Image (tube, rainbow, N blue to C red; front, side, top):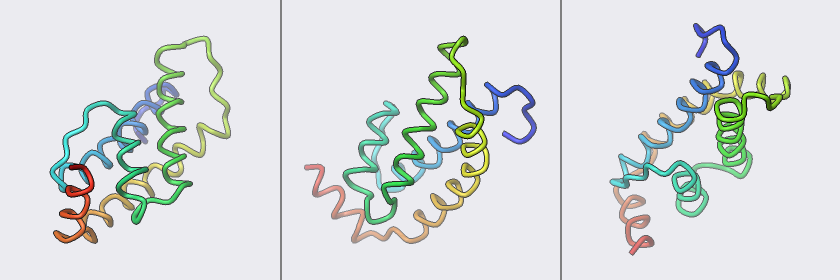
Length: 116
């Protein structure tokens, strides 16, 4: 993300850093979700002990920015949202690594039971 100089690529790289960070948490739980909006919904429903509403909103905003920048080239990306994405993404990555350390087998079993 930091080596890209094109704004659209920085946004895409930041978003995929966020997405794959969450995806790694899901994989630790044994869940495979390749639909990005479903992955975020899973976090809302099953990982609220680890991610607060602001962090979930951050994921949703990042997804929207990525879609807007890649598919709607005429859409203006507000500088404030862009700067927030670039600043907060590394923190989110670290947060996900922390969640992976904290989540235990008991919690994983609880999540899997809720899915049934």
